[in-house]
Length: 533
Image (cartoon, rainbow, N blue to C red; front, side):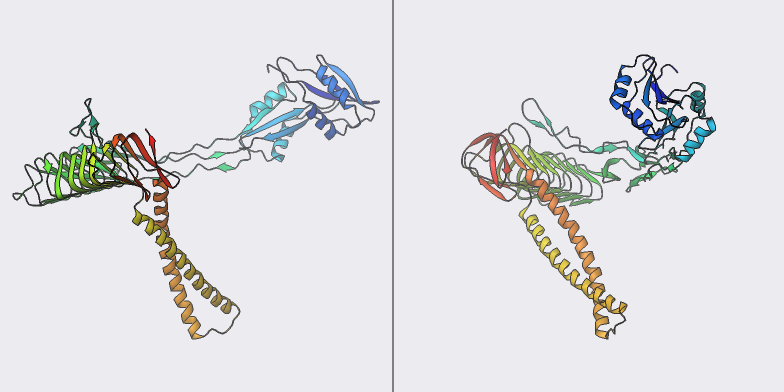
């Protein structure tokens, strides 16, 4: 061993107890006086000069003897002190030498000491034998190590397509927007690999120094979830597209929608289009016609006073001239170059170059893109954010902007709180009826037929009310999160907003009475305030 900590050894003589101090060598640690005092106490050495001992230990540079006590004690044999780390994975032993005429421990005695302390696993024979060949005292020696647990890996799924395509148009240098280069669809060909399952791997148990088994965390399996137009490999670990189409991930399920292409306009020659998949219209959608798709709808031409309803996205390469009769509705996003006199609803985002006399409603965000993007007239509502360069015009055309929770949602939230409270009161009454009945049965009191009928009805009502309260509570919590989450909604004006625009944020109203530039509106406390960008 390359270094030796300082240590001490008792010398029991006829005239009392002495201590022999061995200073540290080769970078070893000095004696810890607190440890020495504790050791002397366990050996029965008392009534000594502590300051003198402190001074001797601090100044010892060579071996020296120090008289401690005039009261002799019995010879002291070699002893050990054991310490186990908090994770119970390492046991550390510390040896103290015997008195000058005391006895050293044998290998068997060392092992017996470990066993008495409950340390049974991972004991190093090599370390014990190395110590016996060259004893070092007052030094921590790791004598036992547990076996670390090896954690397994949860199963995971690797997707081979873009699971989160965006619908953000490209902003050109002149401030206009390129609605042709969009990334809303993930195209796939028949036979393309869509996803693969990497199975879980089980962990390996460990064991601490006390011999107790440590189990690895339970690993979670996974399965590939997919809809139609997809086939799975024989080993159930890979899924492939069975058709040419578009792929998307909804929650944890992969869907492939095959596409139907209308080669020209949707008009009297085609009639209304209803398709379980994606619909691509290469021409226009004429007034009075309807296109419905469970997937996405893409139109290369203009949409007139028509109706488009998509379970996924709607992309209009040009725009919509609704003549106050047009209607667009998408479960996800809507992207179009312009919107005129149309009602538009999107589950997530609406992105357009302009909006004129239209009613827009998006679950999350509405963005009027480009430096000249404007909103004039109509109503624009979004859950979190509305952004445009210009709102309103010099003619003070009435334009309504709303962000935050719909007032109907707030009313529903309040109504639910009242209804739930009432049902909880009814539930408590029925529980009291059942508890009273159970007490009567336990006390062997007579139960009338009417009481038996009542308790039966109460039991049925408890089940019914508990189910209703649980269902309503889930809705209540969701509405509460929506209301709290939408208080941060805002309206961003990148250029100008004109009088005539009415702003509502979480049911708080602000009327724009003067021309403002480059600002944003948000809720501060209970007031809608304007602040610069």
